[in-house]
Length: 280
Length: 268
Image (tube, rainbow over all chains, first blue to last red; front, side):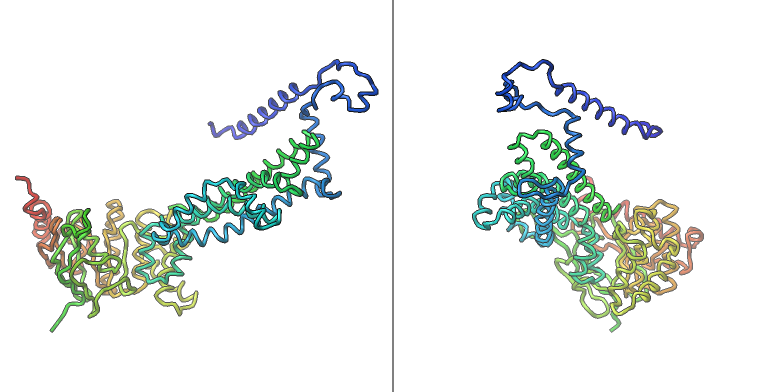
């Protein structure tokens, strides 16, 4: 790519977006000439159903209109099945962040121990290898049965899915700290705790942050599915509820918002990762 | 009895073989002493265990047999009494030059105030000519400057002995020469006891009072000790005019080329 055209890539992005919207618009245009039905029957079951057609997939303009409505008042709360998308996203974010932070509190110190000692590493490795590939949603029934609280169960599911990448990356980062740096600390008679905090932690920090970034991504993926299961609140429940309402435009709005929030979370973690990175 | 400051007796290192039993010795029966204020260089081919000997003196590696005694006490672990300059500088890349030096100084004098630690560290960075690069991180420093920070870090803890593991091996010839001269001046001024590994014959002649020649492993030993009886104020510029310089140099090169190898290893 030529560096003298910094606007080329954004321009191309806009062109692709415009093309996609056009194709979408063309494919979802309502067909002209609907079959005539008895107006009384139509009034009873709705025009589309009476014509034997399906609920039409909304076009970009419908979705934009719907999105505009959502964004105008994202935080309204009119009963259990009618909350603004902002409220739903806030519920989801609260669950993700509490599960994620709990996971970090457990995974980083435990990963540190595992990374420092080959014995601990070998002792815990079989557990990690078995537990890691389990889909977090498989824990859901067990969590619901033992915890008996849907909200806490969702937090637990987030915890269990974000703990592994952080644990494994922390252990790996700690175990692969350069021997030279540890020797420096040893020859300077730096106490063990200070070595852990001032040599091992900063040396492993970029690897730990990579694990945290993977974890937040997975947590945000999992929360939607978890909330579809537990119901009640959250953006995942919102999607499911709108599916039951057959409001495809609302579903598409939610999908877009989920993507944007996920991107935002990743960007924040990327920014934090830059703070702790170092060049050798 | 007049014992030397550092005494190494019967030192040997064996790594366990594949069957778990101790394998052949990398080096064995290594004996030497270092007087207080003496500069001793070790020359030998790669793999003869020079770095292992230095690591044993530093206390970060253990000998399979033999002892190393410094100032009447056996070396059993790392200590602030011995400063180490590592082969690959080993600076902590997330700290600035000043912070790297302070890291050791704070450990040496835990009671010092922040200002005292800083003042002390700055003094030693000034000494190696880095007074203006205090806040640079290692990645922003050239190879020579990084090694200078490493030297400042080792000197700043004011150790009884300085251990240098091929400190200039990775530097270009010009930089190496400059830092060699600086090191010579600093060591001369402070009367530091130094044990240094090198494979550069000229570096050894310039810096050392005495050169230990190691034969090639396995089963490496100190084959010979050569006293460098040249003027103490020699410098790189005057070195090759010193009487006797070429005799010493030829002797060392001859050893490395012809005699360092083991008899079993010389081709028939």
